[in-house]
Length: 327
Figure 1: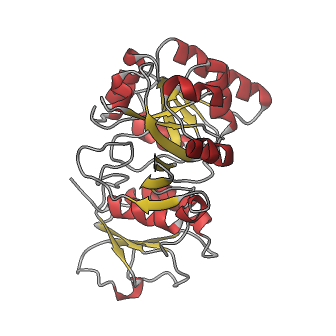
Figure 2: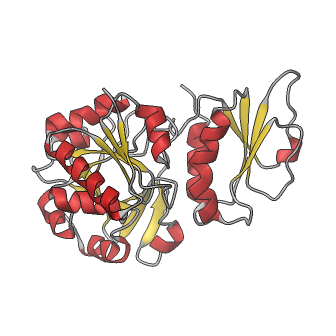
């Protein structure tokens, strides 16, 4: 299979890319689309055969459920059971990077939810994804457009690197805004449990409900984004508080992923900085790109400097910790 990449730099290119994506989705194919978080691998969420192609393409285990992206808010009662708290949350954060885990209706195929009684739902704010979803007129299942467990793609070239020859079409919408996957929450009465940290922070959610966090479960998740080993480079990765304390074994090539303003050190053959201004949003947006570049550098180890665990720093540290788990 030849993988085509469509640019969207002009209005005509934009329109042609959307039209081609819609034709492929209507034919039951998978296509890679930009979202505001990372690039997603989209297929018709109501078609078992189409969703099966997502699992096959990503080599994703069937026990790991998918997120369903709605074309319009009025689709929510058709696929899930809502509540007053949920309506408050989506009024504030949709469209945007908040995924809500809810009891599902019979409309959603079991393959989407890995046989679970719940479905993870969100609406993307990205103009390309939103237009495709709206014109398609049905929900789209769309996990990240990469091989299972690998670094999520934040640019079209990252998708091509992961899935060249496996998918027919990639819409190039440029770099994604947030750079980490959506926050996933499970409403429980008048409270919330954060199942995956993301761009919508704990501090933002606490304005609406009591919030608790649940750690990654391991091999059989009960929601998307809970597998303990995920977002991992091929190169082993470790996290340190003080980058200056790292000692590199003789003959080894180490790379550094820096958060602080510490100067680049000759200790490391490659160094990347997440933010030049200690901006957590900039750091999150750069995280997967910089990890991917270090992973290409032929290193023996990547050493990542810990970020603060407030705001978006919690999501960054969540991704780094999961990237240290190698199978």
